[in-house]
Amino acid sequence: MEACARAGDEVVAVSRDPSGEREDTIRWVAADLADAAAARKVIRSVAPERVFHLAAVALVPASWADPAGTLRANTETTLNLLEAVRREAPEAHVVIASSGEVYGPPVRLPVDEDAPLRPQNPYAVSKAAADLLAGFYADAHGVHVVRARAFNHAGPGQVPAYAIASFARQLAEALVAGRRRARIVSGNPNSRRDYTDVRDVVRAYRLLGEDVPPGAYNVCTGISTSIREVIALLGDAAGVEIDHEVDDRLLRPHEVLEVCGSRDRLTSATSWSPEIPLARTLADTVAWWRERLAG
Image (cartoon, rainbow, N blue to C red; front, side, top):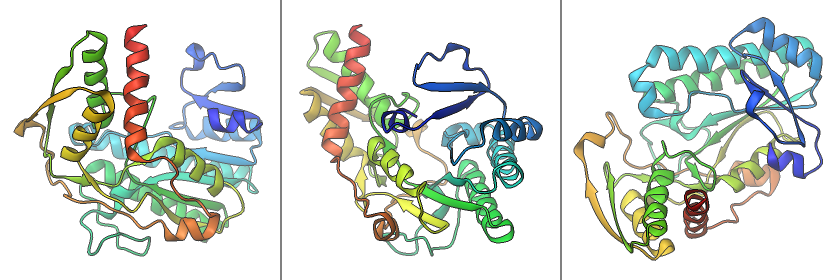
């Protein structure tokens, strides 16, 4: 939303409860996309040229705790939004935020968009279903839908339910308290993920909202980094000595050990490439948390 507003777009944001939002450059509309009639009403009233659909239950652990709720939320909202666009704003370009999780265990690395979908957790299943819905609406109804299969991303502003944000907050807490040593507990330290800075991801979404052909596009760097390496880089960024401990209770069931994507299709279509290295992402995230905790 911030990137669109900075670019001079007229931004309308949809929320179940926008009463606490205060951005002057963004117009907030109250609507629940799980309600098909409400979704049609808001699309009809706004008449958007571009739609970025990022609303979702987005945490893998939460999806294991409530698989039915995750599947219902992520598929129903996507279906209702696509149907609303088809009926009320058929010329709009739609970007659906899919996920690199839809691929599951890779046959080969890096994973490209032609790889089969083999989701390995309830969240990934829900995103695969939303992804397939988007493809169906493009094929059957001619809606201009792009599926942005974003791999892991991180950066300033991310909530600490995610690993990097949680680690960064713990280091920021140590810095604010004047400590130069911190304890970080993680799950599998050897699992590897393809991390992109959220600011680069947003830039990719905006480019995909332009005149690119409908279809699926990976948003990723093509480089995988282990949790162990991430924690070491965070310590370097913060200037803090880290005592890293592994807690078996944090191990994910049915975890895919390495995820790494190919961005060739996205780069070919938009000339996008990641600009922010992981070390800067981590340093900026620690600084963001430190500023807020100090305040």
